[in-house]
Amino acid sequence: QVQLVESGGGLVQPGGSLRLSCVASGIIFRLVDMGWYRQAPGKQRELVARIGPGSSTNYADSVKGRFTISRDNAKNTVYLQMNSLKPEDTAVYFCNAETPTSRVYWGQGTQVTVSS
Image (cartoon, rainbow, N blue to C red; front, side, top):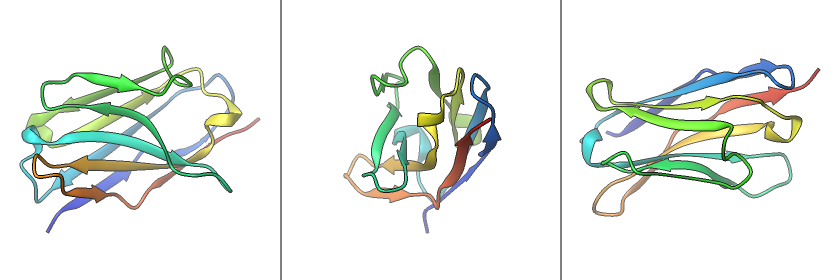
């Protein structure tokens, strides 16, 4: 049974930082594409960042230079370091895993609120 468990969300002031973590189980983590998506109220879920098994990365234009995705295969964990946060970054952030056989899994989400 595949599980993705996110943590690290919360309330932060504009300009602040948060680090999200997602621990995966039930998959061969080192072979899996991992990603972070977000969904703001009334909006569609959108890609924030992805990292491949070889640690290649891609980012949404809106977060380039502010967010960094990384992975620790020894800990089955993917991270999203978020700096210089803006109110428009407020959303529920979801961890995503895609296996080499194109199976897709989602975490339950963690709320990030950027507000003064």
